[in-house]
Length: 201
Image (cartoon, rainbow, N blue to C red):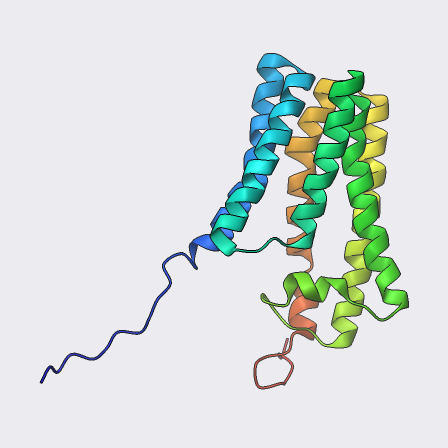
């Protein structure tokens, strides 16, 4: 009779999921930037479309499901990327972030009117908040996305394509990251721990 205790089951791919998701989001953007520098906006747009589809396929292969946000983003990339290539007009691909962020902002703020906290669907696996916390966080993210949409619109209409590409790669992602970090005090203040009580902060 063996004295060895059975080892708990582990899923080696689980810790890799967040990294895989980040890489699937960043990969198309990085390749878009690099291709633009060597081959111009139209080739970069085609590469962006192709790698976006590949990243969706990678997420499906790893997780056997697709979240609504990356799927909707991919649809916009394909629509506005196709218009860019068909009409040879970079304005279409530049509009895509404006429409994407405006949609997210209006969706979040519109959901509040019907007491629907769509952020809960996105962050539920990371943390749980009380209703006041979800409401406040939704307001902040909704207004932030609308501000991003306005900022993208101002940049692409008033600067060169080269500046807009740099802005898309090196400004939007850091802004989103910094804004998310800035919400930590709100999350801690309204977070509900597993026993149903709120955290002390």
